[in-house]
Length: 225
Image 1 (cartoon, rainbow, N blue to C red):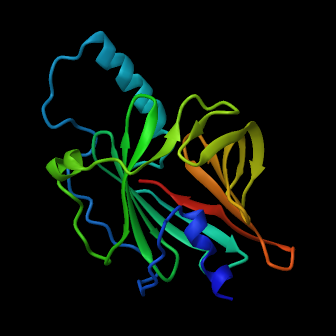
Image 2 (image 1 turned 90 degrees about the horizontal axis):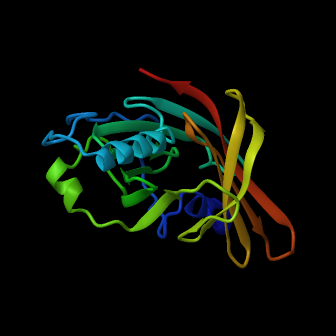
């Protein structure tokens, strides 16, 4: 069914799902000056404080050159192969391969939120944007925003649970928080654990016959440098 096959649009927060053919794994050009600012300068107390806050938000992505696999249920595109890159300080690039499409997400980490700068389907061996290009990008959404408390809202998302325990094929996570978005016929959730970021996605759609159809992607393995 076409509707079911496009559930990953909701789960990956893409407004348009472009179907393409991509290899089962990604090969990233991790060029750049990872972890270093372009023009080091003497930091003020405020900058040091902001840097500490930014460091906390970095913990909601896996480290540079890490890879993660997610086991999918309910849809052929729910299996995910994800690569993480930190080409420059406060910028994270995530490549997500669902077996049919390779999507690149670009994020910028600020003191109290993670901004989404770009998301689009790409070819396999596409170089990362330069620092100048990244700095020129305008945000098109918010990926996460503090405080991580029930009731916090950003874009179409709302934090609905905190401090829960979640079992995954990889491990059991404690202190997980859940964000949720709703529409007329679907509820979408993402589960976050500090030190890993997203560890599960869930989309529950109400079909025309009133039955619910669920698609999940759950962390199953992690490879760190």
